[in-house]
Length: 325
Image (cartoon, rainbow, N blue to C red; front, side, top):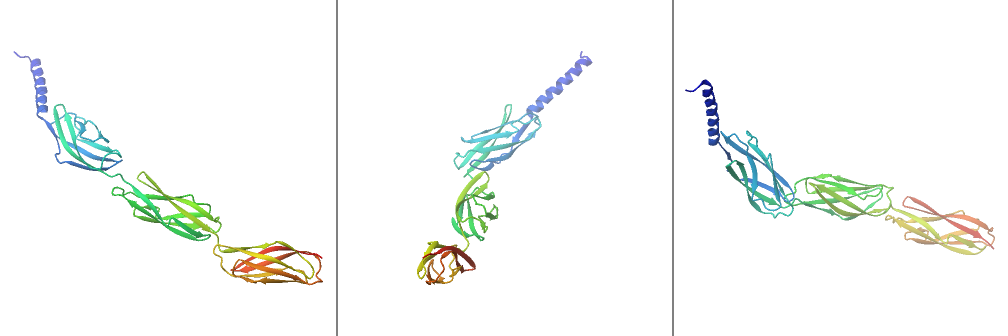
């Protein structure tokens, strides 16, 4: 005869046995459609894996088979809880993995229940780009500007923006990129040279960064001075006897493409000394100044100014003239 307590115990056992039998009949499934992933060398890619439970209440662990050397994986989570139905698979491809298609298997397992799903991985070439500058050498006058075209050549897997910067510019030289963040194939660099920038030749570096890639290209900038000239005398001091003559070479140094004619004159000569320039209008770089004195010229020392005017410029050079017996 079964007591009330015994009946209760048998009921509990029956429920447990039924749960076990029910669990044993349950199952889970993986989608049979192959997963396709394309991951460049040196990069990572992710995909979601979903399981479908059919009266199944148990943990499911995940793994991957068939991955070639250089391809690593991670499931997050690596194991579901008793109700979980999803995990995220991350594949990381090393730079050395060959660019081809690989067939892998995603494995989901719980006890003696094991399901697999095909994963087709295509390893693509590592993202990359190159920089080029046109021209690679340019001359810009003080107070002016010049432009350089920066060309960006991308390979099939590089699609990000490239941020451009300029390095090595001297004081008074600024560079502006348009655009500075390049999503297309080119940018224009404008080099602005202040009037105060020192003349000379400088090596500049254009740097491009994007998606962890860092590339440079060199550009040579020559800062040319503004059109100008200077004068010098040879000799800068002469002695002239009364009634005699002396000659001085007037030398012009032209910079920045200065090509205007220069008109020469003399100021501060003592009475009795006459100047003559040959030529007085200088289109080249030299002229000869001849000083002729009368016999009665007063002796002494004089600071004579030789002046040159041309192209809006007014320059002088000092000649020390000594009148001595």
